[in-house]
Image (tube, rainbow, N blue to C red; front, side, top):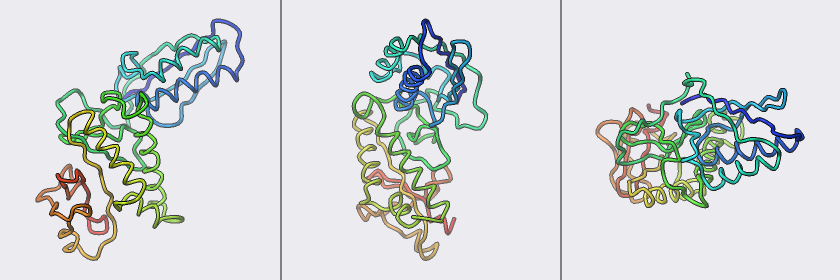
Length: 256
């Protein structure tokens, strides 16, 4: 991933409030299209210029060819606040982030995230690297808003269960059990991506608890009831894969 600097210059008088709204609309639209990552974008102002620092999946992520209709509209609205479209300066690779897929063939995807990940939640089955969301067709309404919202909700539940202080049980249920609203949203998104890309898209199902390692290894797919235990873990993370339901999961973290 890469750090980028966006410089918004004023071409006429404006107000901080108008500039703030216009610039935030651009950043939000870019985020919901997967072109920038995370939720916080530091922005400074000096001498008629606003500067924001963002993280992108690739060095060319902010190219206009990847813009959604929402991004293009937000860019056009900058003029109403007397602000020019941003100048982009690449600052370099981001040291502590995952490396995105580099263009190698991808035959299947995994929809996976956690509370510590801000990268794309869509990963390649082959290399388990994040796939920038603007490289797949929009899942709804012209951008990837639904995928980003699902990722935020999944991460919030994961954070609650990791903290273990409040709402731990319902949070674990949402990310670990079929039939919950969060699972259904993720499964629907995976099937939508499957349809749009014509590539199998698996959904990650979290697992914790259980009785013993032996009983864990004998678990069946919780949706179809078929065998899904793998002889060897996939990417040192997934111990189960159901090619019928397009699900992957891990041995209970209690026995890892």
